[in-house]
Image 1 (tube, helix red, strand yellow):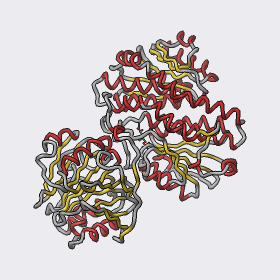
Image 2: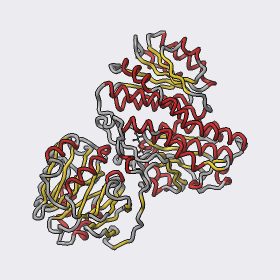
Image 3: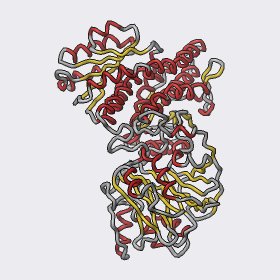
Image 4: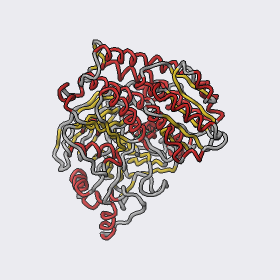
Length: 608
Ligand code: F6R
């Protein structure tokens, strides 16, 4: 939610900031703004809509000369997308500019107090209290004022701040919202995420909770909330600089779907040694694994769907009870947790506010937390007891694809490791599972080869009104994700149902021509799924089935069939999801939509 970038150095700031914001547009894209100090005063430019509008307004930054600046791309929380509500926000005198990502929860109280003291507010945002409050405390020392503000505000923030009377410095601070800083020979940078800085530097610092940063062109200093200087470790980013570029694809989403074989390999290979699954980062002995009473998986959106799939795999393979919950529900339902349970949180960004709070709740109940995370150094990665990274690289498209696939692999590896440690599988069985896992990248490649066929099929359904996805067992988990992929980027209404549940109400929505996507990869449930397909077909549905090669008799019940290569039943999700991701993608393209930036969404959901 919202991206921030800042630069101070020898070069023109606006161009660098616009370039960085472009890489952060996945975080929010309903308005954008820049504040640049021109040597005398702070100038502001803002525009509503995609970043392109701001680029045009400022002629690529040329109309905003100056070597110090901050910028913002917004995903509105408080106040509609408008120029007034777009960041940067200023104090009443226009001498302090602030960009903010997060939510200031006590902003109404602060705003009322400041209004009584004569401060005038222009926007509906929570953010505007920050420059005004800084102004209130400011006696010439920015660090002192920011430190006081940090003690007063409640909620989450990452901030970029410039002061007209401190033209050689940018300040930044963070709590529960991501922020990194970095340096090269030309100057110093702040950014919400690595892609914003990747073109300029690979050496970054991750800012901790309630820490403050002071950046000059040559130096970066770090302080705790009380303004005491602290030391920080530099982190070298290993991502390929091309990772955040489209590389010839029309959209990031398609590029990322095509990166799935590599992502699966990169997540799998380092954890396979001598025919065994080795997850060193787990930090658990076999005895501790055996003593576990339950696993609780908590996540949001697609990552939650990975959890639903993982439940079937973990319970089936390792015979350990698994509970799965969406983080926004888990954190408020007063869950019953005990020390002999393992909580697994799953998150691509590592910054999802609800998942982070679920992690903290689990910690406060004494549970060990394992995080499956993609973004190195993210809040969830830093707060979990152990972290299993999914090596998917930067995922830019708002709709997740490759990170989802990598999360599935992480879950399978945990299941195999736990099953072996709990004597549920022999070492020969473990080897067989590993062999099947190793085949997945090539099998995914094979499915990607069918993209034209999927595009032709999708073109027939670009005008669909409702699409239902059904499945049983793991196929239900696949249906959940397939349905989300379609609806979030195509805006076609879609629902996923456990196939047996359809006749308890929803089947009344099936009418002539309604598309029903049936996932039927699980042998033991196959005949039952076919019965459900027949039920909807006899009520007029057009049935598309995704099933295993060889199941050709399904063609009697389905109107259109996509076959996936044979794999172990537990791993079918990794293959069946590929045609469904492609289907969602091509429907969105066919409808002429902005695939990578679906309306109302943002990639990193750092607010509740
Ligand atoms: C859907 C999607 C979202 C995310 C969810 C969790 O395509 O991307 O549903 O899966 O917002 O995000 P992370 O994984 O960053 O916690």
